[in-house]
Amino acid sequence: MARWFQQLFKPVTDRGDAMGPRGENVAARYLRNLGYKIIVRNFRCELGEIDIVAKDGKTLVFVEVKTRAYDEPTPEEQVNNVKRHQLTKAAKLYLSRYGIPQPPARFDVVAIIWPEGREPQIRHTPHAFEATF
Image 1 (cartoon, rainbow, N blue to C red):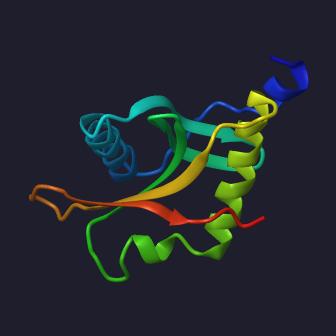
Image 2 (cartoon, rainbow, N blue to C red):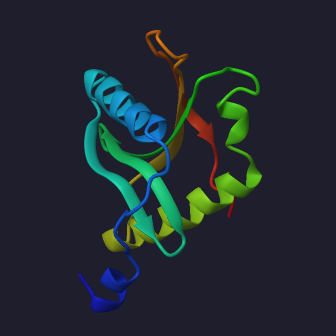
């Protein structure tokens, strides 16, 4: 891997509260149970972060995980245009390591509603949005 490419990556140091990482663990387990192969979690570069990069068959899947204790507004609604654009930029950088032709890719959202003291509810939206450019 080229040095310039490696320098774009930064280690994940602070993930905020514990709910986000717990939700990402639940989402990764859920996706594995669907047959997805988890390639990397918390892919981070100067352009942004992707919670989970997985393979569904031959398709690379960039997964945004939103974990909330409530469902209003819905976690899916919180993947707004700004977030979509950031995810697209990071995904394009990730895809650049494959050269030409690039594998098929898509964006999924996994929403986890996890009220305190209760089991999480999981909603998976494959093909949640298209790349923004």
